[in-house]
Image (cartoon, rainbow, N blue to C red; front, side, top):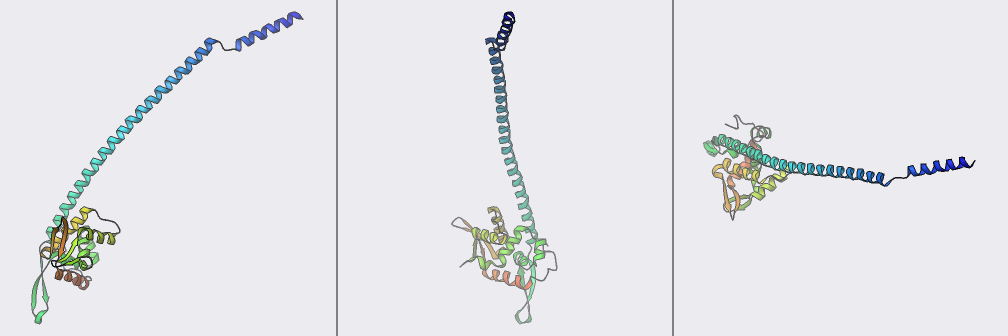
Length: 232
């Protein structure tokens, strides 16, 4: 009986001794954890480096895309200006009209391109005119409503024109758009519309009699389509 008890006690002690971690095993586990930590740290560093590379690429892409957009926008602007100039040239030839009024006689008057487009019906204007030409037409037809009266005529500045376009279209036009509309008013109006500067401000001055004709003719002729092409 005693031998059996002794044997069991010895086996239990050996089992307990075997389950206890040794210093060597603890050291090995610590080394393994250290290695794993270093691996993770290296992986984090690699990811950080990759993030920095991607951020640099993104910055470069944004810079490149911005310059490309500006270049494309500039080319579009150049083409638009060339188109506007070409269409203005095509319209610069005055049209001779016969106005039978005084004593039954026929008096020949010169109709400017600006006066001519003021007489167009809306569907014809939409088809034949560029966007900025339609804006110039819109302003010319009721210029007395917007302009400031002065000894030299009816005066419009760029700010007033921008306000008129904003009210008509619901959005504020670009500065360059306003400048083009002012150019069209002066080019199409010929001697009846002058573009000038006062105290550094760009102005358009419209002859009062011409302003009356623009308004009167748009009321009288707006329902009659022209007999020939607007662009001739």
